[in-house]
Image 1 (cartoon, rainbow, N blue to C red):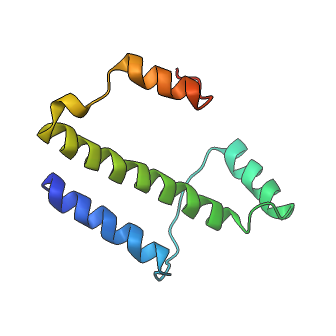
Image 2 (image 1 turned 90 degrees about the vertical axis):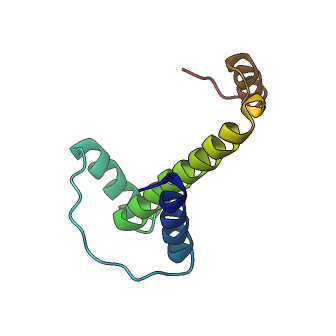
Image 3 (image 1 turned 135 degrees about the vertical axis):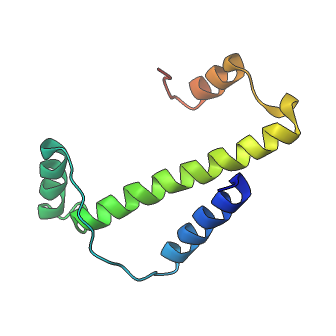
Amino acid sequence: MADDELLRTLEDAFESVQHGAQTRPVSVTLPTPLADAFRALADAGVVDSVSEATTRALLDTLQSQIIGLRLDALYAEEPDARPDEEAIAALAARAGVQLP
């Protein structure tokens, strides 16, 4: 699948979910401590449900992949637009984020 086609597929999926796409049950295997933690959050009313929390996490991951593909396309057209590691570290520090 070409990057443009992949990007369109991902963007369409993201938009559909934002507008209340149908759901379907799927089987997902999670590490036990993670499943237990989100069950505790759901039981405490912090998250609506483990399914909702999982959906949010998958949407966040999908969005980051879409952003990455868009940036890759931009940098392919304009290589000088890509920040170097020093610039990224400076921006992260300003935002209070510690990079690995």
